[in-house]
Image (cartoon, rainbow over all chains, first blue to last red; front, side, top):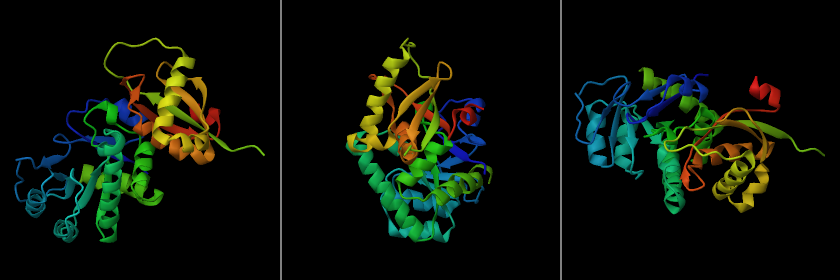
Length: 175
Length: 103
């Protein structure tokens, strides 16, 4: 199975590193994937590879209604109405693993707990979940085996973690 | 009875800043200390890590117990500092034999 990762536009890496880490492709946001949110609005057309970013649930809901096909939340708060909307629009919930790798101590433990809760709620409501590093720098990149272990840390089983990093991320990267 | 073990190939990410010249022993002590911080003293014994060899300046092989391999891989993804400077470790692959790992 081929694996795919998604990183922030500030993350500089070369293709040989992506291959060594075990990924077929590491997609860069705003280069390979269109990002909406933080003031950037979508066009209203549903595109194959678009991610809505945001901490505010209302903003994310508007972006999902506008046509984004994936949602990356940074707040990890469970908003039931937003979750219903994500499920009804067949959106993918993208969980950024950088929230775990880039934090320390209590903050890291808190993020693991929140992401576990969000993942569990999303899966029990039939929402597909994608695990991506969303790394801002090379320091927060992970190999595919590390990404699988991080997915297991937040409650995914090995099979779903592989499906997520393989199939779901492929859908987000290639459309 | 012999414990089953796995060999893990770990690569250290290039970080900005001056390169330090450290020997394998010093590096392994620092690495183990950081590893213990991430997995905790109670779980460190499950991994039972041992430095096997350097492959090049950035990559090295670590032996861990089979049951602790997952914890080791997870811990390396959480290790972002080494001796008070920025660091990152990628576990590239794991295998039951060194030959298969480096092939």
